Image 1 (spheres, rainbow, N blue to C red):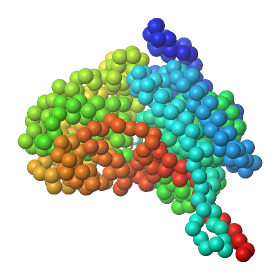
Image 2 (cartoon, rainbow, N blue to C red; image 1 turned 180 degrees about the vertical axis):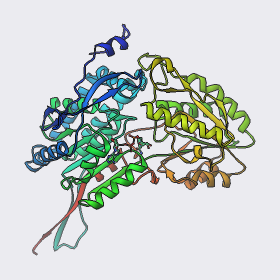
Image 3 (cartoon, protein in one colour; image 1 turned 90 degrees about the horizontal axis):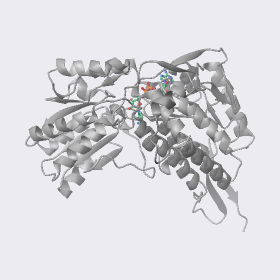
Image 4 (tube, protein in one colour; image 1 turned 90 degrees about the vertical axis):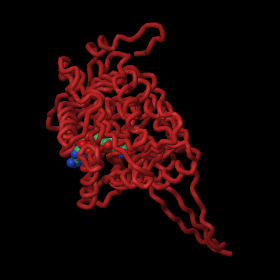
Length: 501
Ligand code: NAD
């Protein structure tokens, strides 16, 4: 399938005609779950079942890990020169681009995001991520230590072996690519467990990798539920590391699983409740309001780094709240298969109930909805919520403390810089933060004081594969993206060589 520049694609017709293979991919072959069980894939667009996926359990994970281990042990991938892995992964990236329409449609049907963003953001970023790590891998060097002349000490990075990747549903392909890129480029084998809410694109990615020349067994995908396939993978004695992205609740379990099994490395990329601080000296509050609305409502608010807590100085708060309320209607949810839609469906009925529950809690605790606050498009059978803004929020309210993972913004007022910093840091999370000030000293001072893995100054939307992404506190301990991610999937080894005089 290709996009024609002149004829717009009829996505609904394509969706009606599309068929999906939800079987696992193990050892280079599509296989049913060993029990033969499947689970329904319900599209959040209309609440209808549109596909089935294999319900992988421990036996399927065992088979996938055995296949990954055998592939690693015989060196069919790890033993290739970095430049050879580069060529294959570049081809993999090209195939992702070639199949962009099909992958985008699958992603939108599976998890409800607007088709325009599945195409431009999710597919594009996935292909770029794989290409970036492919291009990098024959340009990184190891080290020789400055030891005395009587010996040589080589410090090398070696692939770890079998990497288990467990990913969420909000950016299914991108989250997988952030792990696949560095894990595969460094020569590891992978077993990927996608979310049960969005398993289909991961399976197609594995097929495209095979087509590109990634050897059988190097990249396996087992769909299934977290407490079944996910738990079996994280507890497996022959998995060397887990690259996990998901909630803080499940991230905690990943560490438990490691301690109960083989002390495998655990890299956790977890939830967030990111703070957005607006000072009265910032000179373009219109742009600031537009950026905030665009960031909190993007992907239906289902982004780990969504700036869900606004801290605004009391002297400008009323005016700024009005600007935000005027932005919100631009993000009214629409049919995700309509190419003009900017906000789509929440991932499922459970998420819809969770988000509506938080909106109810906001009202009960005395905050005031100045935009949205209701379910939308219920006649579609899908799961939609209006872009919602609460004013009059206190930092101790439930909607300010817990990750909602929906299109809901909380406005909290502050009196001075110290109070703004104190409240922004008063959170169990520390993924991202943003400070808006035209005063260079203040911008630096506040950016330094904010406890977050990434701080944005006078913007929120910059993002690039070249920079690390990850959090502090209960937002996690790992960093995806950038060359630093190569460190996660390799072990440092020292080799001492004696040199006789
Ligand atoms: P989740 O934690 O419920 O699930 C994530 C993955 O873990 C899924 O594949 C799931 O099947 C699996 N899982 C669930 N229970 C498990 C268990 N007991 N054992 C093993 N695996 C298990 O998260 P979600 O709802 O899919 O995703 C949303 C969360 O992800 C949010 O908290 C969001 O902030 C976070 N997230 C973080 C980042 C980041 O980079 N920090 C990026 C995207 C999403």
